[in-house]
Length: 296
Image 1 (cartoon, rainbow, N blue to C red):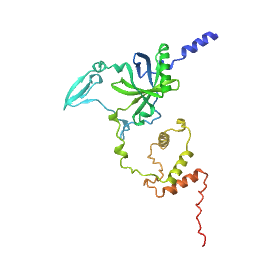
Image 2 (cartoon, one colour):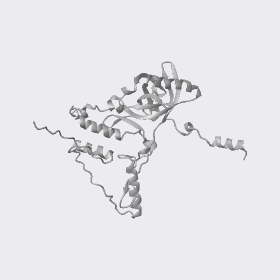
Image 3 (tube, rainbow, N blue to C red):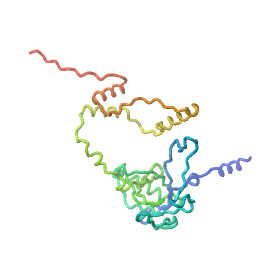
Image 4 (cartoon, rainbow, N blue to C red):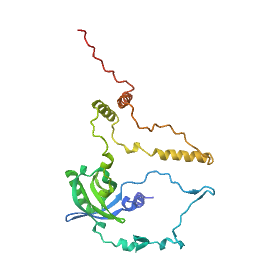
C-alpha cells in the first residue's frame, strides 16, 4: 500500500466529533443585530449504573407492562396521542405535529437580553451544562469576539432557549477556548432558603473553635480533581452480584458497620482538637500553662 493511499484511508476512517455526536440544539446566538450560528452539545453524560429489572420471583421471568385503555384493553403505540385534561375526563387532543408547529423565536434564536456578574446567579439556579461551538468557519470570528468580550468584562450572558417541549432560562460564559451554556431554573422552581435556615440561631462562634475548624479546612485543602472520586456504591453492588452468582443465588447479607446516627457532638472542642492532632501526626496539643500566684 502506497503512503498516499494509506493516509487517504486514515482520513476516511476519521469521524469528526460534531458529525458523530448529535447536537442538542442548532440555531443562532443574537446580540442586538449580530447573529452567530452555533451548535450546542451536552457537556455531561451518565456515569456507571447498575440496572435492575422487576422479576416475578416464582417463575423467574421478567415483568412487562402494556398500554391499556379501561374497557378497551391493550392498544398499539401508534394509537396514542397527547391530551390535556381541562376538566375531569375531558381532554383537548394534540398531535405532535401541532405541538412542534407552535411558533417561538427562541426555538432557533438565543437572544442574549442581559449581562450580569458571575456571582449574581446563585448556585441553586444552575441546572445542566452544554458546550457551545461555532456552526462553521464563518461564525468563528464573531464567536471568538463574544467569548473574549465576556471574559474581559467578567460577565455572563442571560437569555431564553426553546428546546424539546419547553423554554429554558440559560446563561452563557467562556470556558477554555470555547463557551458553555448552562440551563437555569426559574424562580418558582427554587425553594426559598429562609424556610429551611430561618430557625438557625444567629450566634457568633467561639474564636478558638473557629480557628481549629479553619485549620482543619486548610489541612484538607487541595485542587479539585474529579478523577479522584467515583461511585463506590456501584462497586459494592457489582461485588454483591458477583458473589451471589458464585453462591448460586443464595441470599447474602453484607456485614454493615454500626454507625452512630445520633448526630450529637458531645464536646466540639475536644473533637476538633483530636482531629487537628491526628492531622499533625498524632501530636497532642500542648496543655495550657496555668499561672501560679506568687506568695505575698
